[in-house]
Length: 466
Image (cartoon, rainbow, N blue to C red; front, side):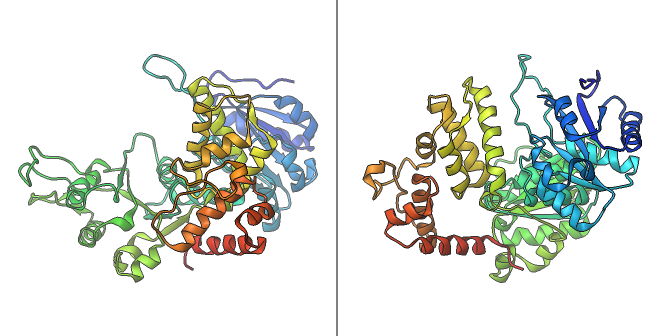
């Protein structure tokens, strides 16, 4: 049995349910409301569904947990995005399904409107064919949700938060280390928040000089300052009707924080050098890689502004806290950059795969992407080896390693707190020894328990204040 591919919207749904009435009801609900966007097929068991899917790229499963044998069987579904269903709609069942790999859970009976909303959410981040000016296809990374790659419980929780927060007009406050995808999260909230065509304007508050920041946000009139040769709309005005994303909000000058607070309270802006005010309607989403509570306590972030912005919080976990997502991310980047650079790597060998998961990735997803791209461009081979990975991770300004026989460089000493220096050294040693803590400890001449203790302390530092 093959999946019928519709002429419009090549998304396909496979419904797995032993009850023919339930199968038929779900298929009818999908086909009657899909407007050609989805095609649906029904299967009575798991093996039949896997045969139907084959290597088809654009498939979502809707699987009855009782039919397939429970949440523990979800990992056998070849990594296909799967919405679990069950007549047992308990919280424990939902949690077990998500931990088993489901991207969503729907208790029975399932309403047609809810079903279509969840299907749309499931495919919202999938790439569609886009073309360059020359008409060629652009390689895209296959994603699990709105540009994100990851099915760990931490990421599934973020996807759920995005879906719930997006329709609101309340401010969203995103926290997370550098490289965890804060701007991607802001874009997802914007995309789910309303019809297409609304503007999304992003400003990095840490990248623009302080004396220019007010003009960047609120605009200026001609002659307001040297170089202001014409009237210019600021980010707030350009985002009217849409979303204004203020990245690294904690870097903003205190004086400008007061003006931002007035803008949030009044809904009006006054361009630099101008006397007239303009009313704008924007949804504010902001982000920071700092601990906002610590910034407020230290007096670097106005408490009144923080509590005005900190209405709907989202925290993006660092990559080291969602290790299950690392292989999937690495494979996605390897495929994407391989196509982009015209190189072909089949995957990662066993040692490289183990190193990927055990390395701490202080630069998070951004660092992982850069490392994989470096390998694709500079290395030769069929599979990514441990040596390729170590060379791509190692810093070019590194000093010789204490383990000369390994011929792998260690990080150079840079200014910074002692714990950061220790972390850099320990993580490099772990990468050199493929994640083997005993060997890394022996090379560093410390106890393995020291490494375990240090890693736990880093995790505690990364957690936001409660």
